Image (cartoon, rainbow over all chains, first blue to last red; front, side, top):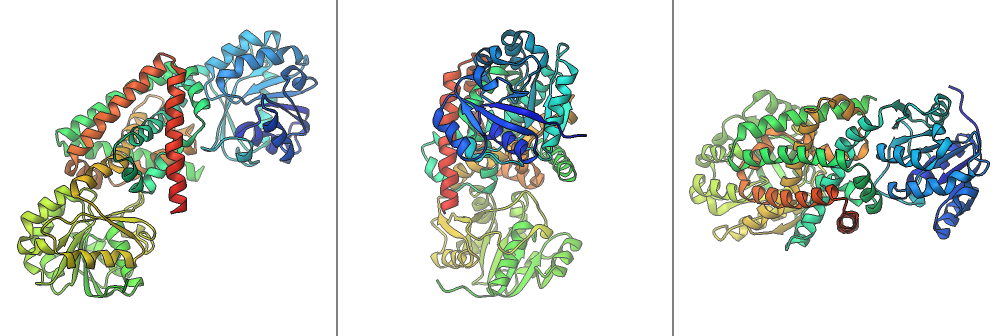
Length: 294
Length: 294
């Protein structure tokens, strides 16, 4: 695979993901110039000072002018307004992609906002990140060995998909393609549901009378389990809203499963508990072994 | 604090916790001889070969003969039978302690099984561990900087508590004392509930039609969140049975909290979701910062 070359790369939203992609693209020599687009001048200036972008603007249409590739890395709730604002500035060949964690909503936004450029919009989702946020948390190797899911639709130009695929592969990611609805179901299960569960647990414990004693006596397992509850609240609010159908379905299934476990605990059904825990351990061990091998 | 010295230390159950304590005690020069007690000869012989114990036996009463300190590190479900079997072998000065994750049940077991030696039984719980199990996973530094909760009752001899406290402090742990019922509520919140939630999540996902695709697209957050689902199923079955009252209460509170979040997602109540996620993030960040500082 020959590494792609983008004369001008525009990144809207220079936080953990957008910033890391900019750094990775620069390090791999993929971009001539990198333009940052955002709303807060002090954050954008910080990104420039850190060498993440070459220049910046708060005007989306101006920022995408002359760009070969435009990456949208903003919370899902601001995606449509951003697309509407930048659409007039897009060149006739510009490819647009995003990094949002829910894909059906983004496809709808793009279809409504991008006009003819929708054919060159490639919905994407790098399944990578940390619980930290902001450009200071960005690093060039974030995507190495990580999976990126592209969810092109019938109208998406194959050349545009190929360009975006090449970008992600050039920064070390493994790219797969998936239907947007399937993406949203799969991610609801492995990412959105766990985040909701972790946030809910920490909030519940923080509200207990003995919360200080509770947190003081927590072990390493608790720290790992709740790491994702340190993620950005606005980003996760938007994911819950954008993918609410799949998340509610998973929450309902989880609620049923938990009620069954509750019944087994209350009924002192040791055999049922051991079966369930052993099944889960086997699945989790196999998953962990696969990740280490992969 | 002068490091204690035990001429003979008996450890019943030479797995991750019992084995690590034996290694730590040896490394700190706290024990003259370390005797392993267990049921499976090949596991005990493995512990001897690894240098974790000096000798071993499958006869509890024989194993505790002449021991100054006896540590019970077996799953909670086998605790009472073990206590009954070893009681006849205890010397008149021997101190007994355990490492079980639920304390009211162990206190009941000890009161019923140990007779006069109950006054020298110090219920204990090192809040430490990994998702691995078995003597091969044991390491001498497991307890360094970790918390150990002792839950003596009115009948417990203060000298016995002091001996056990000194042992744990000598291997690097921070010791606190707590009422058994309070211990069980606090641990239900930070440890038992999270384990049940993680096991339930992994088992639910493993049962989905698209489970292979689901696990293949999971990110690092999922790996951390589900690490505790790789814990020993028998140990966790026993914890759920031994502490079922507090666990059921926490499961009910969690179920209510999750239903509220589900309603906010289904009703697209972004403000409620953002408030909850922001509260949880603040609590979790404060906890993580405290742990790093501590």
